[in-house]
Structures are given as structure tokens and as C-alpha cells.
Image 1: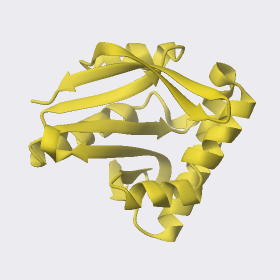
Image 2: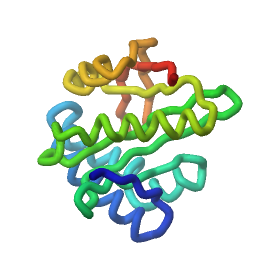
Image 3: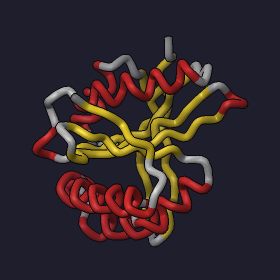
Length: 166
């Protein structure tokens, strides 16, 4: 059984950052290179970065399966626009393919319904073909491209995907 625990404590934040380090180094190095992974870990997925994001309105959740953390997700609701960014969904490599991603998506969609959020959107790296295909199977449609300077000489070269939450 998969459960979702909101990240609130320093211990939760530390666990989320630990998972981020493992998952990002395993998955994204081949897509964006080690230097950019290191930069993004420090600036966007370190303990201090995660704490700052939570203080700024992000909702992080640890994904727990069989009593152990196997990944994390984050959403950023915008109630004024009746939309929410599905900012993060990361699962350990050896736990992928077992339905955790789909359960996570169901969880996020239920959060949206409870908050009267109508549109769920996300960004995905243009070269992350597995994730692009997966989001498509879940009903997301490409809504544009986003190229954003993230500092340090790096850019995020992403697609924006959207889904209407029913």
C-alpha cells in the first residue's frame, strides 16, 4: 500500500533531499549531465531549497510504500487561477513500474478536486522521453514549450503539459 505524508519537519525535509540526491543522480545525469544535476541539487533540491519552497507555498509529500520512503512529489496550488503545478514526482529506480506513479497522480488529482482546482500542469524535460510518454498515457496534453534560464549558465528546456481534473 502506498501512502503520502506531507513534508513538514526537518527530518522529512532531510529525507526528501536524500531521495532527490539519489534519484536525480541516477536518472538525470544522462539527460542533462552531472554538472547541471549538481547545480540543480544545490539550488532546487537541497534541504535549504526545499524548506524555502515549502515556506513559499509548495506542498511536498513523501511517498511511502511498505513502510519506507520510495520517492516524493510536490504541488504548487494557485487557487486564484484554479490551477496547480505538479512540480515534482520522483520515485527510486528499483520501485518504478509498480504503480507508484499512477497512485501518486491519483493522489494529486484528489488534492485538486478537494481544493476545487480544475487544471493540473507540469513541465518535463524535452529529452525525458519516458516521462513524456507516461504523462501522455495519463491524459496530459502538450500545451507549449518553456525555455528558462535557471542561473549558473544552465537552462531548463521543457515542455508544458496540462490536464483538466475531473
